[in-house]
Length: 255
Ligand SMILES: [Zn+2]
Image (cartoon, rainbow, N blue to C red; front, side, top):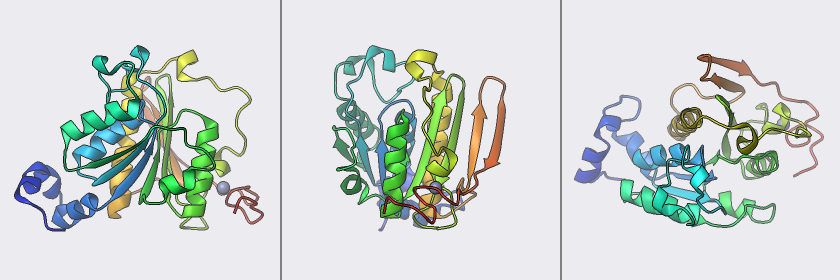
């Protein structure tokens, strides 16, 4: 893809990065990212991916914008309260960068729909807020051989990891990390969440996605970055592959 004069100007601070350049920018413009959730994680992730010129974003969310979302879901504004999140997202992302094609899916992602929804994506970014959806995307990404950038945030803390189990059989998956969902897990609506913490983690998801799309830098495949914005402690831990993982282990039953 040849960059137009406007594009060279728009992305100039990125193009001058030696690890990106014009070739990397063209590659981003040719890339498609599927984002599940236009909420706390999806907001900064989608904004930075759109601003950086990832050519096509497919955004799935079936919620409406609520007033209580706005403290952290910075893709939406007060006037969008009551609107479908994906419509509000599309409007604001188009206003930020009309270069980017925004495809919206305003329905719940289910076992029946997930395969066709992620089919066209080069990479999947999980901004969901529940274990069932994380498992659903994890299993679909194995079948479809997609990279999955997964994250979660609660309170002042968050975590981010990349799963490449569909591409590299030696790489662990989300179920290797969490084989079973917890019986009862606190949520943002019951335990609270700092907007800037979820913004930090969503921005890291965007940075990770860009590096993976371009094949540059150090990625989080096989490891997880833990972020504690309260105590300012950030560390990286390795994730072991579970030999009997039901998704990616040798006895797997899902594919
Ligand atoms: Zn696994």
